[in-house]
Image 1 (tube, helix red, strand yellow):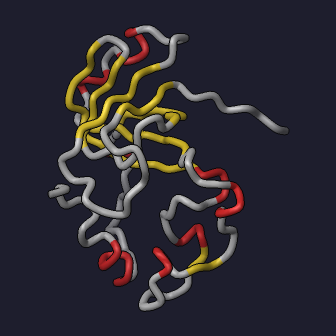
Image 2: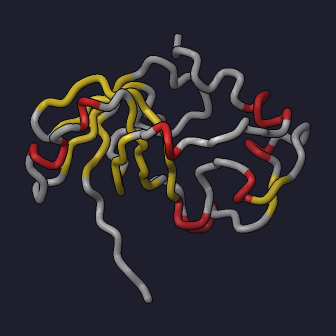
Length: 156
């Protein structure tokens, strides 16, 4: 069964295009679409963080990867399947990031450290609830730590 998914809002941010690193400290706004009013965000300010699901809308369909590749095309890292990495060139082009809630202004949610660019369609916003986070230690390979080393540093 095919189902259409509509954006619930759009990102307002200073970055016009995707970049690999230095997302730390940046604030962005998620402006809800006209079908929503401020009631849709009611109670969200009681949570410290939200998970934002969004579309990598600038990824051309011809750039989508369905198999294995070297993350960021770095041959020093192993070729891994697209579902073993968080790259933007993925099937369905869906991104997910946990961000800090800064404040709410009417139908606008201001967040910190959302790694989405200006104009990004937002598919959903969910409060982060501890009971939905991993219940045991998270394990990941060394290359992924190396890849993320500068990701959340502030942009100079």
